[in-house]
Image (cartoon, rainbow, N blue to C red; front, top):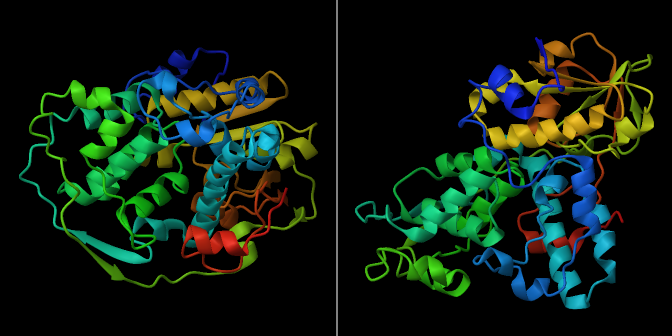
Length: 399
């Protein structure tokens, strides 16, 4: 067990504790962690013309991205907060933006139910006639996407779709390897939103394929094509070749509490918690457990066995460190590099439920003394959401 000294610089911490647990050397993310940065990003959010600019890719200054995703993913700001904040904007922009927020919540609901089953095809099995003989190495669009991701930890939604379509439907490689690659580097990387995006693009979720070709690049980032050495012999001039789609079934458990946690504060043990265990899903000042037990220390555990397996980018670790360091300036905070299952053994702690497989696994072994419901935009569901549109028709907002 290692207690991380937050008085050290990020670079010193990376070199001392995470050197063998990351896929790259020290790189600062373009989006800075911390509650104050999250609050500023929300308070200065301007979605004017979002409906027209949200799909822009390049030049960067023409993008309509909100850059809130990393803060939302880590619970520094909640989906209900953002939903309410954009009420003042024009109907068209507000509606488009809120639809993206609902998509985020849909991905969380789906992941809460299917969990690790999302590593396989969902509702449809996909088989594409991949052309592995073509040379895709010199494509400026794909290379630019990878460069931005690796150097900043961020991708806009359009390039995420391009990348996923290209490496799931066109090349001869396993799509999971490239989804893992995105997950390693994205500061907002999540198995729910990121992986659902891949399923949607390749048709595994809806049975309809998003085909990436030169047409989209010319429309959204023309300079990528203009400055590409293969622009006169583009290997993605046409849509991906024929794709075979086969309907399949997926077995799921629809138990509400198993999937979505308690509806209200749940006292599991007749004792008082000694600390609040923070997870990467809920690092904000308004985390329910943290907020309720304002006098207790906070504990965060970097999961060493998991990090050793995932080999995340240093950008992701640095984002989390900035969040934790700012938290430590407000209350007693201890940050460890350890196995959380071992660390939490025989300890009394409070936590906020996280609808992800790892949290469920840890708390099956180490039952929280007190467990708090997650903050949600939409109330939990007791049905399998086979599509976003069918889910949207049946949900009840929590705002």
